[in-house]
Structure formats: C-alpha cells, structure tokens
Image (cartoon, rainbow, N blue to C red):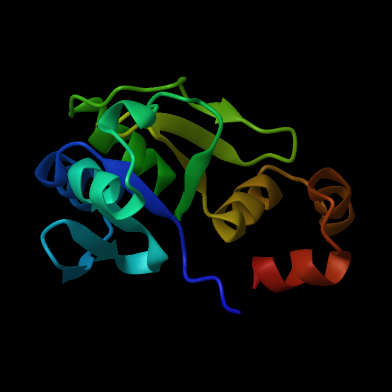
Length: 154
C-alpha cells in the first residue's frame, strides 16, 4: 500500500483553488471539476461529490475542527508574510517562533481547514547560524544531528 496524499472536502472549489494557488503558491496538476489535485499531493474534493461518494448528508461534514493541518514550508518566509498581509486571509495566529527556532504562521483556508506555513528548515538553520549559534548549539536546539546541521548549512 502507498499513501498518495491528503484530500480536503471543500464547499466552493473555485475559492479553494484560488486560496491554494494564489496564497499558498501550489499549482493545479489535474482539474476534474469536483476533484482537483495540487502539487505536493494535496487534493480537493467538493462537498457535494464527496457526499454522493460516501452516501453521507452534507450535515455530516464538520468544518473548523481545528484538529489537523496542512503543512507547507516557504524559503522566503518574510516575503510570504508581506504577501498575506496584503490579502484578506484569516489567520489562526500571528507569526510564532517554535522552540527549535523555526518561524511559522497558521492560516485558515476558505473552509476553515488549518494551513501552517513554516520557514524552510535550511533557511532557518542559516538564519540562526548567522545570529551566532554554533553547529553544536544548532544541533542541541533543533534536535538534529551535527551531520544534518552541517548538511543544511552548506
């Protein structure tokens, strides 16, 4: 068996595609109308078609569950923050720095699925190294091996 990726049920496919392509920056690989596959393996399925496929009424679906998230990494994290500041995007929280040093921001997509955008780990590593953290300190802070830290800093 091979995992192929997550699928999100969406109320409005056009709004969902616009969010994921314009805000998150992924591309549409396949658009079958009621089912869309995006780069990275994420798929979107309309609520109406999913309801038909599962024999469930539309009141079966619960949005805004706040119990799962789609995770992306961004090399130009500051640029991404500037981009979403200019857009009407509902945030779960403002930018945070995780204990291991990675900066993240969490957003809601149009159907209130949580989308986390994290600073690319190599970029994070280089940023922290430029602030003076040694390879050993980075290894301790990030829980990554010294070898992995050194690889990321190249």
